[in-house]
Length: 424
Image 1 (cartoon, rainbow, N blue to C red):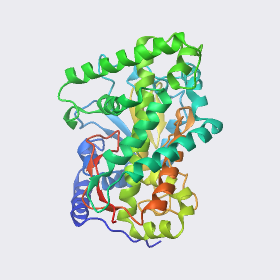
Image 2 (tube, helix red, strand yellow; image 1 turned 135 degrees about the vertical axis):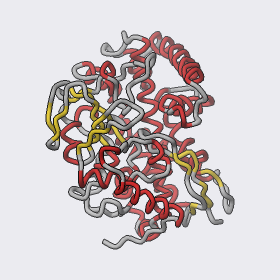
Image 3 (cartoon, rainbow, N blue to C red; image 1 turned 90 degrees about the horizontal axis):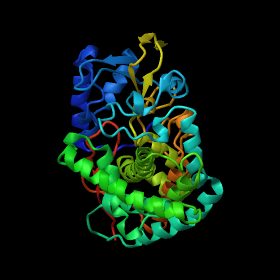
Image 4 (cartoon, helix red, strand yellow; image 1 turned 90 degrees about the vertical axis):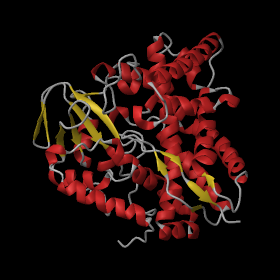
């Protein structure tokens, strides 16, 4: 399939250099989880080579403890759906490539094994049921219209700040019934909780600790208020009045809060930005969408695949096992690279292309599989669908006028800035 693309010359040159480096580096020296590859968007040839030559690869050359990389779609599915063999529990190190830092061992239901995981997850799942999503859809459309109508014409602005962050943070505030005028605290706490030391988001571990203690204290006050009040339809009240979560320790509460904040912030916010970037890099697809707005239905899952907003999830082997012909020992770290599985040529046709009318666009790994599949995935899709319906009503096009600045992280595939202009 021939897809028209418009990649910037400097990015094309970076990718060419990355390909040379990836194919000349000995496999035993590979560290595919290096954050610089993700910040520069040069990860692709590294994972392409791993899928071809070492789909289950053991990295010993990283500045962190050794880890296995699982890079093919079906192998990732095997790990993700075998929770009796591969643990998510925070006591084994958690769900990120790096072990949870001492002092941050906050258990959340994504970092728990059964049966605790299921009991706590069920507490918040009613928030994302179809009837409630129908109610939220009305609010999402009103807010999308308001934010889009406020955007300048013929003037460069940061799409991340003006649209992606604003809309996702408004929704987070609604889900928590968080004081609306202080909603940007949620964005900051999300960024701080996942930031790497070299990211520039926090200057020191002391600053991170101080800000997350502020988060814990703030939500602690809201928890006490909701626990004393009649049950309401917000995430804090749901947890405060459920038998499975009402007696949570402060650490367990903090773990679930950070999970819900990051999950509600990063996935939608970064895919919302990626949708503008992808259409600009693929002008033929943008024209398809303008000609047929009904393609939003397939464009949304396609951009979620193309972006893969959370690049990986990690598990820890509970027993000796075998995967892809490799022997994995009990206690080994096993990293599922969703970002690689979503480009697996054996499962997805022409996977590097962004094609908004794919026949089976939901064959992607971005939300995970098995018991830990993203509880809010339908809300994320709903937000993206509505914002693009409202964009197409208003703007002939949104032009990207400069390179994006990406987050320094191999976990969150995010954007700090995306300069755009809307012709008037």
